[in-house]
Length: 140
Picture 1 (cartoon, rainbow, N blue to C red):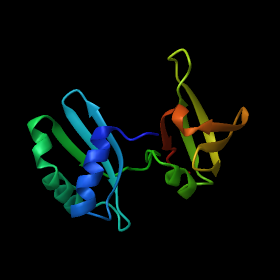
Picture 2 (cartoon, rainbow, N blue to C red):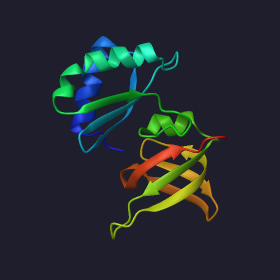
Picture 3 (spheres, rainbow, N blue to C red):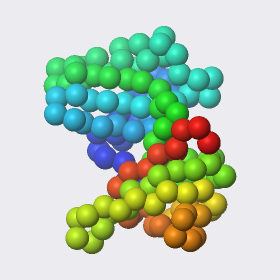
Picture 4 (tube, rainbow, N blue to C red):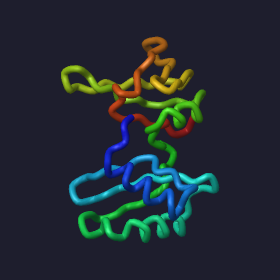
């Protein structure tokens, strides 16, 4: 749940030029820099183009992709979990032995430090610092 230095850098830059844009997730995969963004009025192609233009200097190091979160929206901040209480999500939890496990269920609680999920194995509380990745499950 901790932002990377790169994500923080991008968020700070966009806060000036596109203050309503929320950077949901920044991923680096090989030479590709992928950003998932959101906006209160929705994500349009024009918005993605404006964000891409603001980050043009990153193209020196990466192929840049900017897109909406889609139906399987990533959950990366405590307020995301709060916003989507009642929805189903999949949470990948970091294991002590470097083997992640997934918990899937309804988001039933969220605080500044942890999320609570009603899953098939019962109600599970997961501290944010143990979450490797999480996202909403489409269709719910």
